[in-house]
Length: 588
Image 1 (cartoon, rainbow, N blue to C red):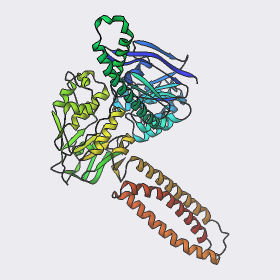
Image 2: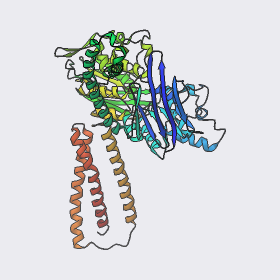
Image 3: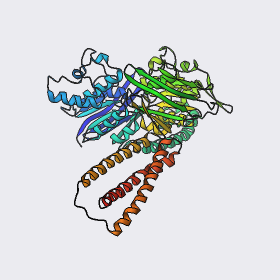
Image 4: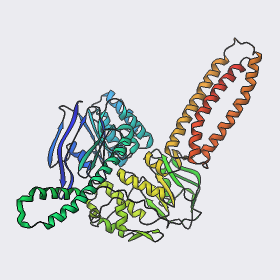
């Protein structure tokens, strides 16, 4: 294969902190590579080094000659006076380039090309930067969190765009659906080194688990041997000197291996000390608008005890506004929220928490509480809680200013959970969190004995955590769907097929209507015609029942899945019988 990038023995340190040491890997033409690692391990730093924006200590980075590289930064910077169009590229009045720019920017919901960049939000600027990278049509794409600030429609469009042809790319993303569908190679940065998995994200999970099990067994064997060798070292007189030098050297190598730390899965953090009453909250015909833009219109919803609800929809449809109204951070235009007396909210907002940069990580959490009571005589100290969310003991005594962006988000999450709320309201909690932390959070929320509302564009996360959706469609239109995100997308797909079938039937009816060359029905056809009327009525009744069940919010997931599979088969049978009935009716 034609190599585009070859990284040889690369090392990067910040003072006493080693991010990676002596790492080597290569990326060939047509390969789509995902880079994964825990927060603070150096993912964004590695991408910055590869793009030439940051230096390194040792090693070599070799690109193929004349290769055109496009780099999407995590936090791009623009001239605030520059227009959106000029920020994309210097088009010099090239109409073809302008047309292409409009097409890509429209897909990313950027419509005013003359608007100054300084008037755009951070999320909009990231989308312009993404458009810029795509429009320059590089040979090799390096993307740092490309799905951040994209709504679900945009993410699915980008998935399709990057999957077409033989694009070559290296990207960091925590969107596991995106990784699974776009990437064919996963490289993991762990314990200062690189591991390569030649497959998608599902393949990586399987092989990584096998690697950890093998490493664990090796460390166990090394520890057993280390204890025996340690006794030998202690018994040897100093005078033996060089005679046992080879064994002494082997001992220190064995000691290094035995003292390796490997990620251990934490016990599931199940709390039984969370009580919430039967009354949660009632959203009583709430309306909210910003000028002419309607967010909510006479919206009513009675939230049930222990409900775990996801909120999805395109950017700007009112998802975050709904949470701010619920929390009392924004006033309603009309209506009200009637909240139960026992409800204790834990609110994770997109804006985050402003930390004291000179405070230690552990002290930030201790300011909330020294420990969290899990019930049954069990409790987690602040330090144990932080360790559960992958802050090592050393990191807990670091100052906040040393944390990466992802680690700060994770610390903010810990301060919310440490308050021991019984109702979690989480606005985009998955942004910038590493995959291991996402898995821990998923387990925590699955076991959480209170109520949860989550706004997120992470489809994998939503499927794991929620059992019910509110879909914000814009202009105050909100759909209540009884299932997770994948079930909702499947339902939408079935609905689109059904609507398409209805159009085909209508066209066929119009075409047949003008056919004047008719004949009379035979006896056999009359019997078939009568039978079809009864069968069609029965199928339509079954269809109405299934649709009512899918929208009713009372069925379990297994029933919803079974009925979702039955619905397309039912529609096909109904279309077939309806078409035959129409043909026969023309012979009457």
